[in-house]
Image (cartoon, rainbow, N blue to C red):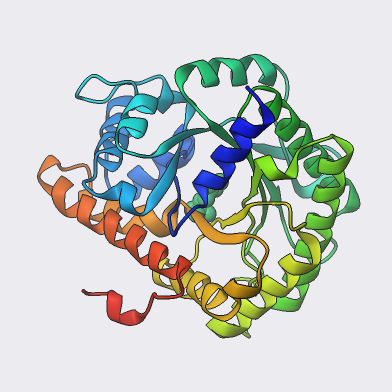
Length: 340
Ligand code: 13P
């Protein structure tokens, strides 16, 4: 595939006011969310869950691409379609999570390194044959008294860049996700400093590894105070700090930035994305979009609870959060949309 093809896919993923749906929880993560709601932790329950998400009426009005998990892309919907085809038939671009998870990093207590590079070239070729047009890899950066370390940032950003180069070789858009965790009591200023360090290291590695910036999307965390920090800044302060940090560190050639939600409540994530677009959109070189998992799916999951009779209501709740985030891309989201 030519460079142009994945560059066009990258642009299509952030065109207009749609965004991404991350429905790529690993089995352990998906099972933990099911267990909390008393939903059976079986392959069939996970398939049923992903099936009603993908077939939610009208979802593609707000969602441009859906990120699948390895188990899901190998499954079929109840109607008999392989999931990547079901996503495409529903009007969205199929994507795939390709990292194999974050593990404890040797010599770096409290820090994680993401695995999955071994054999990745062959796996990407297989996913591309199955219909995936973009991929995702998540690196995890923990903030603490003496961390993140230089070693943790360097190793994770090099892995992200090597993954991105392999994606582009396979004709896939690389979604690069360096997540600075919001766990902890650190301040917004500290999160901003760490995020800027991480992004500068990331774009240095992407340059070194000859990755075409036009054919990738950045999936960062917002710049936030730690979840137990006594001072919690306003929506506008978070929007200002996030945009300021991104402007310093993200090259203008990147077509789009699609935030992860990271455990923020759905309405707050929408409000913060909205503030960024309402205040800065006209002045930014890249689109500011979303690639949320929990902030779109969690309310719907809580309605579904594994019951077939609740599927319609759960699909409506899913589309509601997707619609709110799409409005936030235009700077048109407000609390009046909630409860509508
Ligand atoms: P959250 O939006 O729940 O943080 O998930 C995004 C994601 O893709 C994590 O890798």
